[in-house]
Length: 630
Image (cartoon, rainbow, N blue to C red; front, side, top):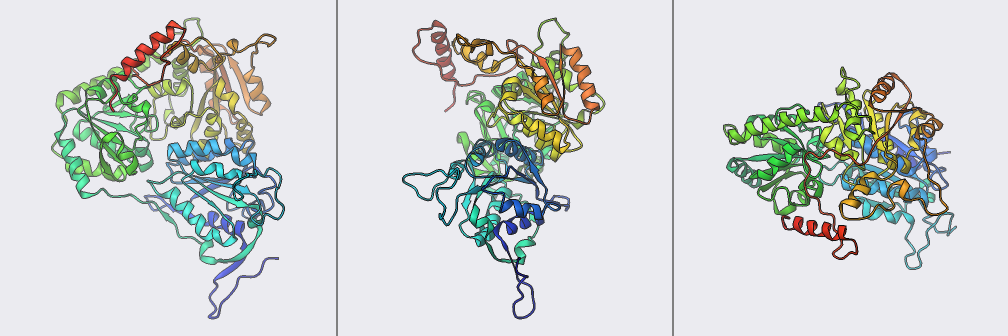
């Protein structure tokens, strides 16, 4: 039986004797975050857990005790549940999180891929893997990793390079400092990312005198860093000196809630806006200054003006190679980077403006009243945006030809299957050809209406991520678009979505293999090899035709295989009216893509090959390198 709260001389309650994991869970359950309008919400939206011997007795019991104030969700794969937690945070624009707990061993190492994804994308998630015994009395325990040279090493140490903060709690009272530090990292706009508290299974169960203040934490108030006066003055001067500026909107615009400030600056100063993968939906698709996607997967409107710009104002962007065309796209422009993280703001030898995106854009708008870009530049941008939007309609509403459809036609059918409520839709995707096509062609009507993980381009994120988005936005229609390759990598959270009652619409595009990489393989001179399923059958093997609809039905979803775009449109209307997770499978071709737009991307090609196609591709590669800005 737990000891009663301790009352020191003077009569004021100070401590309560509880276990380390009880303290941790109660702190998370009580923690609130204050939004801009003063609303207080639970900071932790729940805990994903797959129990094992390393966490079921300690943390599991603590979660059971607080199940009414902090929900625990059971998943089917540790990586999948971490993806769901990360997507939940992204859909909440980093204002709320979920925690994830696993046992030691394979449960913990299954978290590594998801942690890397969160690290790359600057997204918060609290990882709570069990660990080996701090006492070492029963070593080696089941699943323990034994290193011959480091006695204190466990499988959890694999999480060190892919987390922003890592700690292993060797005594119960260490939770008093470790947990607040982890939360500080997740709520810091510049440091934000995954954190890990490794929990030895004996320490989880040990009691200590916990200060009551720890169990009643103050609300989190999210920081908005102001710009340095000198940097701001230089940024204003750079903007005023420009005649042909372009704004590149990254994910930081969404996380800062800066969409209105961005739209105001763009209209006031006549500056066109291009969106990265993470920044897409910063402006509504039909905003007159929205040029659409930029970079390797970019629209012709955005990329043409980016090439001719004399100033690129990158807001909240990591300036990934897909955004910059491997540093070939903005070669004639001066770069001004507005970013809350100095590391990102200083990239590519650019001029830095380190501050919150909304604060920075608002300051720039206030200090540039009366100034505008060259009117001919603004007029050209408006015309280019309108022309591109008309072309998107043409590409996505093409009449069926009798051949297998390609991604653009599927996107159009999905997108326009609910013309009366497009603002409710959130498109979720991650890897393959679809992110390129969605980046160009999906029409996001509101911030967050486009949710594509393309920082880590992680196959398998899609369905689990869609579940996290649905939990964050229960009133939205969450539409997961996924290729057959990614579906096969990770699909088990379909069953979780059914079990939890969170309906998804999953559209599976079956091109019978890794069609995206097969195209890249042949584009770089390679032979058809090890990508399409038909090319992977060895002597004595058998060609396989996978029935994705039957598989999804076995996981509890309602599913159908459709033949062509008209049938897809009808299936989408039925899926929207349903209450259970829907899976719609359609055969597509990998040989057709949207050729409009795009730019060079550096993929190294061998200098020497017996194949003339590779030698020709290497010559093109060398030519592309000549245009690269270093």
